[in-house]
Image (cartoon, rainbow, N blue to C red; front, side, top):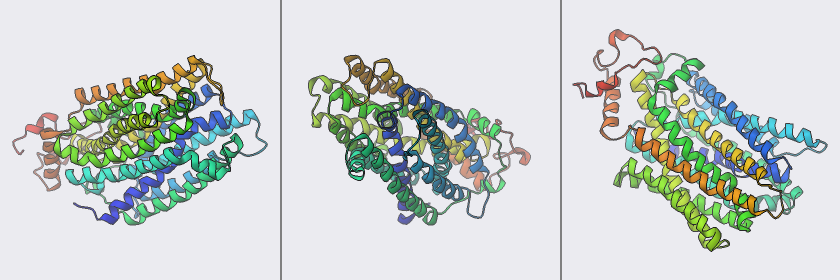
Length: 485
């Protein structure tokens, strides 16, 4: 089934607004807390990590709630509206500094509103991505549609990463600590308004399609949600794939401002690096459908992991050979994020395929539980990156807004380059060794699902109309060689 261009653009614009919100947090919140609010780097990194452990439960819980929602507005749109409206309030508060708060009180304030931001963002983000598998079941159309929101999200990253500081300085009236604090406050208000508008387009213009399986689906508990994750071996593999790759990208995003400001010695290069990253990610996403049709998903994912390795390797060489080179920073950024664009296109399709695989194995479509893993892993990897950064800065004697020691510069370099390289290699290893939803195997799974939907014989669907328990396969894996295929 093909979607109208109005639906495609409206869905994509929703990603633009919500990623404008999250990119301001992911790119700048560590620096905002340490260099502007004056919080200890180790405390901030540890707080981020603890917050993400909480999100690990919160995201799955929200996915369960969405999957259990039955309303006349569908199961996704009510939570899109609720989550967006609550999140914008918390978002603005996160970047607001009230007078009279003590130094200790600022630690409490930052912790409370950072955790609340993550929780309320989850309420909106999980139903947004959970809509994707239901927009179309056609494999080729799904690959094309999945690129659209990712491209808009990359556009948001390009704007915030490449020009965010300039906007902040312009809105705040300068680049001093106090002026930048006001600049962050004002830009958060502007982005919040844009967020509400773009999600409104998604809610009003994108049809909340309900699969036939939803009519017979039973509500699931949080315990059953964990069972769904545990029994779906390809979901577990996908978690590993996404986790390692996101660790690589989020570490680079989180530490790059420190790297260019203190190691390379040119804060302006950070804007160049991040702006080119945004362009490259969009290029990778746009190229993804064509490359998949010419090559294969496995070859494209291999390229997605190799490009960052080359880019980060050149970045390390440029530190010593051409530390202030704009061209070197731009080339490294392009290679790094072009691969990231290919990976984003890949994992969006992979998650949608994992939903189909879960339906094949257990007879139920659990889109929100499955896609909650994406939200969880992005935030968790961002927190891990912040944790590594925080400890590295503290252990090597980091002093905000000052010339750094050689030990500090080397520590930042290790976190910026070595750790992401290891993580990208691990993601590729997990994908090549354990992921199997591709080619003939996946096509046969889809054939089984299509046969069920067209009222296949009971022996192929559920024996004696018996509904499976969670953890029980509807069709044994060996049934892919069933005579009906």
